Structure formats: structure tokens, C-alpha cells
Length: 190
Image 1: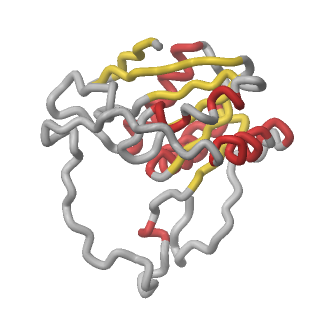
Image 2: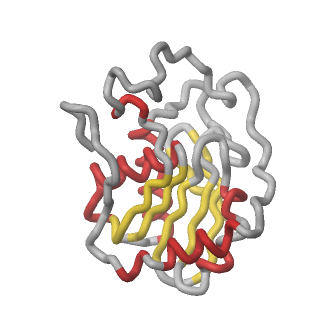
């Protein structure tokens, strides 16, 4: 375990294994979300998992620190830079998938590949989609309200081997940064 200091936060980072890889936690999760899959991936990758800013063991260092996607994407790049990785694979889950997609858009040259698992990007749905949130409420970030999420408990053990199998296919597909399996609403692009 180590710390990576970024503007407005101190990130809790864990590294194990050989070969490049970067795992980005989703939502209010932390590096603990991957506790079952990390040992399996570490056989072929250097697995770098971290708690995103304001989550779990990564406290804000400034009271008005940004939680914007571009700032968190910069955090992911800072983690890579800290360990001296010029290029890496990235896996993002939930809101971590949005960060992974932002890395594809802004830092494609730094990526060997990307997996964006279930990004909550409802704004990309057609305006008349029944799955689109019509009137989103303002939900404050828990860390802003003085609440910090505790570390995430271990996941179901049967998920880890399946996830490891999917992620282990990354080296077989160098050069493909992202594959999109759905239609965007007119006028939207990644």
C-alpha cells in the first residue's frame, strides 16, 4: 500500500503482480472491490487498484476538492505516472467506467486497452427512453457531507474467476482501446 498525492486528495493505492494493468473502482467503492480477482490477474499483470478521491481510504486534502470526471481521470494518470507506467490497460466499473471512457477520449496514447463495465451514462440514451432519468435530483457526494464510505466487503467468490477470465483476454487485443455495444442518441459521441 502506498499513497499518491494529487491536487485536493491523497489516494490509497495497492500494487501487485507483473505487467501493466490499472483497475479503477466504481461509485463509492474502493480497491477492496477487487480483492478476489486481484490475485488471479496478478499472474499476468501488475494490478494497480486504488480508492478514488473522497472514497474509503482516499481522503480529500482540500475542503472544496473537485470530484469531476476530468479531475478523477487526471488522478488515474497520476497513479500510472507514480509507478512509471507509460501505457496500461484500464478497467472501470460503474462510475469508474466513465473515468475509463474519459481516459480513452483524453489519453488514448497511454492505454493498451480499456474495459468500461456498466457506465451510468443515461444522458447518452435517447430523450424519450423509458430508462432515462427525467429529473435527476442533486445528490451530494457522501464525503462532502462528512461521510466517508467504509472499505467495501469482499465480493462473491464465484465472480472473481469469471472476471479474471474476461480481463485476461486484454493482451490478445492490443490496439483496441474501446468497443461500444449500443447506439448513442443522435448528436452524442464518446
